[in-house]
Amino acid sequence: MVEQEKIQQINPSRLITGMELVFIRFFLKIRIFYIGIKKYKNPIKASLGLKRMIDFRRALNVTKLTRFVKSNNRYFFGLNVPGWPSESFDTFVDSMFERHESEKPKQHLLSLMFAITKKCPLKCEHCFEWDRLNQPERLSLDDLQMIIQKFQSRGGLGQIQFSGGEPLQRFDDLITVAKTAMKSTDFWVITSGYGLNEDKAKQLKEAGFSGVNISLDHWDGDRHDTFRGMPGSYAWIEKACTNVKSEGLVLAITLCATKTFTSEKNLWKYADLAKKLGASFVQILEPKAVGHYAGKNVDLSYDQQLIIENFFLKINGKETFNDYPIFQYPAYHQRKVGCFGAADMYMYVDSNGNAHACPFCQTVSGNCINEPIDNTIVKIQEKGCPRNQNDTVNENEISSLGPFNYFIT
Image 1: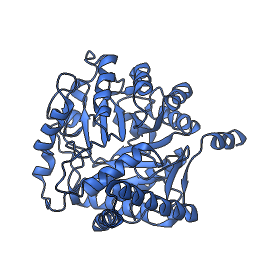
Image 2 (image 1 turned 180 degrees about the vertical axis):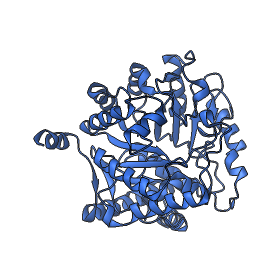
Image 3 (image 1 turned 180 degrees about the horizontal axis):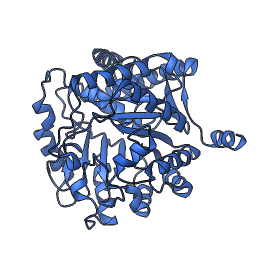
């Protein structure tokens, strides 16, 4: 117990509530207003921009968060929002103001998901990289650094999420890439937790990572191992979570809510486990018929979607659950305002260096090594999100402010 308290004093990562939350929310609005003043040189335009952000959030009918995350003297409000205060957060907000001005072109890509390796020891049921796994690597360390440099040099990139394969299977290159990249971007790693020991967690912290997102697909360890196709993979998650927390990194876990999993009982059991593991965020994703799931009927039913939506709104919005992690359910917002991908807020680069609208839209729009990044981004934006084109969405409601609704109140 003494050792745990010592760790928290050195590298605090915790949920904040009550009056501390009230003060942080107040100063946060002041900071956003200040960024608007600096941008427009006009307090009226800054006020109107802030109001539009607040109105958009309310239009989504999302309950006000009753807790934020504090980690290493920064505050986090969502997995896709850079921690505040930071240069990356200010850039994010500046872009949010700009995106309300229809006469101006989109200036910033805010987030990038980048698969840095094909290597992976697991055989996950839902893997969207399935067809590329464990093939010869196409991207050298120089290629990885070049791609990151290209995206960062455009300006406005607030976050990079490194994935794979299993990115920890290429750990030395992962650390080198982070250390040599510009520090104006938040870095996250998306991992199964396999091999995430104390030393690796320490190196992630020293390399400048903000957090780690660990995939956990059931509250029952045996069922998780079956889903992941690897005995003992759940035990690694427990170790990985402990090591991440000991370094003060933000801990997130992600669930793929399958048809067989989705029930109110399972969601609450999962939430209890997430709290026990010390997670600050939980992300719930819906299965998609791509990769290992290609050609399979994996879409959740309408009733199952409602179960997750009601759970999501309840656990985030009621103070009774302030000791639970903050939950995110991207599909809830996507059904209201459209996809946040397609190089609007974020895009995906696979382990061949090819660009996609998102991990689930496997349509190549260019190669990030051989082609100019700006041209590739324009191609993706012109194509848009294939899933949006198939869904019924009011085009007047489509906005790229999805993640912003997690903290503007």
